[in-house]
Image 1 (cartoon, rainbow, N blue to C red):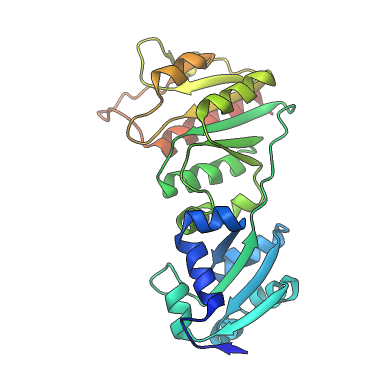
Image 2: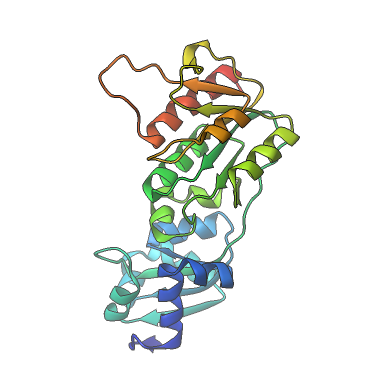
Length: 261
């Protein structure tokens, strides 16, 4: 069956899931766009409810599409114009997978480095940090009052690591810190402060969590006060501060190398 109408109920549903956070939350579903991204989803055992693909995409990306279709409950073929309506990118590949959201909660009893993101709103920053976390074998990420991790922009920037990295979304930073402290995980607030220790002077515990704040405002004073230590990256150059993703990468790498876990 070829869907050619942009008003088709299934197409409207996919469009809503892509563009509306509320629709994703109510349904518990989200959409992955792009042949490679969809393949990463099934490779990581994500539950694929249905697939939408153009005839051209099926031929062009056959190595990704064949296993995708075989693992999907339903497959629908769509016209190029419908793909353009659904797609978030300028030149959509014509491949979309509707998946069920399923978090993979971290094991807080493990030794190693954890990361808490507090009120981050930039999808690119979130995705970059999550990729760093996976690369550095971070034990888990807590996303507290952050942008929707299942939004198309975040999904694209994670390059598939969201399907493999243990993470938990929480409504407040306070809740996240409480959970970490409950499990004996020492928290390190990244903040520009006269009371902060410079990174080379910090001794990270065997169970550590790097706490990164909002892109514009950083961490609140309350959050910094609730963390065990405050850490600051030395900056001998002229820049007054670092991008959240850059700061996170430096801190995560330093903590991981130092703990050796």
